[in-house]
Image (tube, rainbow, N blue to C red; front, side):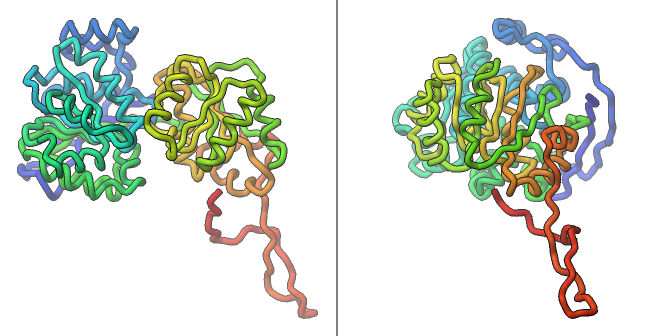
Length: 429
């Protein structure tokens, strides 16, 4: 793995100094201890209790600038350990005040809960309090905690609701983090994010973490950061390197039986992705009937029900979780050994985030994708984009070439070509 470090100079927005930053690239040592970056002994001890001693690439890149109070833009793939890249600097830079001083914006309730848990493990060592603010649960308990917490982890919608009701204030926030910014763009949250950022003091540190930093995310970065330092983890493949990828050719009517055979093999916790909410619930019921410990996770469940399903899955009481893409981000359960795409992902980006739930932070894992005959053409394109051609072919799958008419023959009847059209719209599956 090569670590690329470069300076990014925004040309609009909060940037005030016209002097350009130097752009540089460097090869960084593969491992460093947190102490090498000046992290305090209490935080190091809290990390060590979780068996965390060495930094991951994105952490080693971000820590020096984040600890120094610089604005940071960071691009890295899912499962790269980026939460600690901003959590450690925030904890180190804050002191106990009993008022919100740091704000982390995340796209989903699951990610809010996950990030809050990561923070709590080290914030306690410095006497700081953490509050998670998200929808689907009662407001009062969240407000009571958030008012007196130095660190708030929030989804944009619920935070704006609390601000509109004047339940909490964020005028003293000194550090703001946008986590999974690309996902917030996909979910339509960027207008809410802009509103929240405009309410913060301009005298703040801003850090933005995303799988991509171009387009609208790049414009957001230019508008709300000052002289940010860009950090990127440049990997040879777009996937988590430790993951093993496998495709399975299957008829639609045989998918459940095929899944049962997969679940009967040697495995740990298994996350099964299904396209629809109803499909996830139905699959969990069917697997329970067949004797598997299965739970469902989808957007129509109450937050309490979602948390119960996740808790049972994380502790192993249920070893199969049938979920929609709501679980593709922010779910970090240590012992997930397999991710099964029962229904295929919409595109290669969705595949990366799904399979990224296993093989996280240096751990191994396997991604299995079911492919029915009518899905072969689209899935072969995705395999090409992800450099998984060999794995796709190993499953006996090949690209389906649509037949299309070409110029008429001399007899007036059209001839046909097995070549694919030059441009063809991807069918959503």
